[in-house]
Length: 619
Image (cartoon, rainbow, N blue to C red; front, side):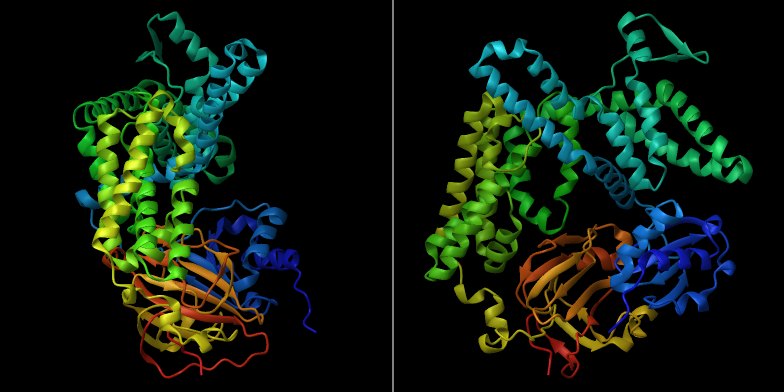
């Protein structure tokens, strides 16, 4: 019987053998590797680390010292952070020597958008929770006007407002985490904008200076852009001070200098600049909503199916958040997202009405319910509408029609909420207009889909790709994508080609869909979308790793179509990859299918060559 691994001792031994905590700058990880940034890699005892039980290999590349642990990774990483007091790094690049993209208007715009989206993303769920609590309190006060005078209302309304009032602090955290800096520095400098000392000066209204420099007196609660600028400066200053301050004084002076300089610059320059930019954006949003809203909402709702498939729909989140701050409502972004979901559901209803298959009808109606009521669209996009092509036209038509009605009737979102019909209360007094627009989107999408129809045989269901009797077998293994299957030895990464993580095969993908290699339960599913693990009913475990070094994209270019814990069928889509986007950035998208635990089963693969997703590859 195999000896159980002691993860705590493994972590302690690895840390000691890489030169101890004093030799570690930071520690991060991806799906399979601990990733150390070391002060001096020469101090690491590589051969000694390799013989530690549970260690699969060691690779040093691109400024990172990587210890490959496979399925043992997470417990060892957690033990290293907890037991050894190591600073957890956010660095996840697999190749720090990767050639940088040339600076262009497009690359700069994408970088800015990625920074803003990454900064805002961590607080969205909190804003939604606060927004929905506001809606609940509003409904209660409309039923009982006296409730607004109670202490219960005051406390709960403060709780609902907290996520918005302290937004600069939350944004600073997300921005610092996105950049890889120490979050508390940016958070402290941003929190100072909300401190009572400063707000008292704002209330007094008298001119004030800071170190002889004039300070613009305005309120920064619920602001977004000032914190983004502050976090950016704090990150740069932290790096600078870490370079120029001698090691013995770092712990005392780096934080002091970073917070002080950032705070002063925040009050004098950055916060006022962010305030001006926010006011400018607010004016743009008001103009669009008041003058060309029917075009803006209709166009965005119609384009969202393609934006979702490209993973670009998250780009609207920062603008949606800013518009709720100033001018205080969103007449474009959240309405468009909601109408897209309604249109996806409507197209599924159209498919259900038009199809002759009872099974497809039942599936389409269930997925339509998920779109409209739960706000979950991936099954509709990838399972129903995209494979049949023409229903996507119905989705676009429904979104556009709903957008026109929404704008012309003046529907506006006043609080954060999810993109579902149950979020109607966030439209407050424009709720009737929003409901009319939603019904329009559903009905038009369904009618257009019914009129256009679709070819039922064009659907690439798993049952069509894999013979039914074979697909029913518990030990079936199928190709995870269309393309060419190649030997693992041809993969241009030593970790995979040397089979350190396990034996298997690789694929050169010619399709954006990466599917489950077998029927089983999704275990680990990376947040970045570049890898996932699956376990068959007989205990055999596989790891699917999409591309080499793609973890450094932080999820950009990947759309996750399932979630950890789901039971999936062989050939069922799990990840969608924007192949063109990633290849333009120089990534090798060879996709590895690795047997991480054969559980005593002999697995042999068929001859290499062209394959289709869902095609059986096990002999």
